[in-house]
Image (tube, rainbow, N blue to C red):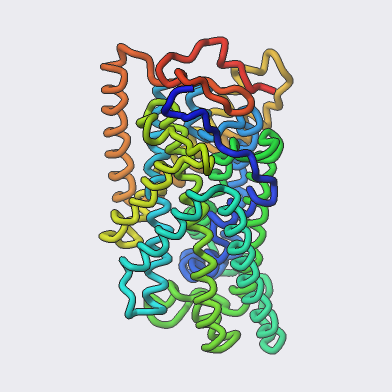
Length: 468
């Protein structure tokens, strides 16, 4: 092994419950309470239907991730799939696009936490909360994935408990305040297909992160079975939770009139006061903020793994990003780099920060669906593959994610497009005007990478590995 890898590899220590918990922590279970008011306004009071439709829409892409993670249990996720099944240059640009998403997601998670903590404790500036959040998650992730797993399990469990506690208070409230219409949260006279569709595009952002569990493939036991199951379970559990909570909240507050302009932004907090009183709302809000720390932990973990994979691949610096500590079995420099992104977030608002990430996420989702179809084209003559599972459903998934891309703000599209252009020029430099092959790697079924993999082209015979 070269000194850049130190002979160390990521530690396989995660099981199905841990991987699912990371995915749920990434998605943040309490997010449905945060964006409920916005969804209710956009859908004319049918938020439950919106989350149900969003779950089905994102499930199409989740099925594609599940298929490919079974065939290719490697941490590169969309980046690796595109390189294997499309072309190396396309894979590079997909990885570059995803990098925009994964680089700024930790920053967004810390920024949101800092803003909420500052609202609860206004004497402490946002930038100090940013440093505290980023510092703690970075330290935990450096120590090792075992500690990260334990902390995430506790915090995600706490977050789910708080959401269920809020639902319990809502149900008690409904016992004493009988709803006049149990169907209205699903469909009412003001509901339109266009309104539900537009609101679904907003709600789909709540599901970002289900794909991140594929970045843990090389740290998961029996990844070929565990990761596909985890991807589907994360979407299923998150979707059921979001839909059920939205339905109950819509019964407590029918319609979409929240009083003063802007109150829809804090509808979840207002409903907490309505069903449990001011003290209940304040304590659950604080506890929810603390539990939301799990999102930053999970986001940074997956982001650092993508940087590690691209560094190991030679697309980024192997000596820096492709190095795993022999002691902690973690890519320390990749983790530290993501931690430093908190300094970028100090000068941004949450709206601008979110615009950085959505472009990369939906671009990756679209390409992964296309990769499943490409897999079918390559393999249908040598194995029995379902046209429905490998062509029809991925095609529908690609249509959905392309639609979501078109719903992004002009700012998001400009930032994303500019980032892609920068990536193209970086690829042009790496390949010396495409006179050299795009840096590529090969991996065996355990994710082991030859030391010289990033400096040599990918042999054609290795395109067939990991095809169970």
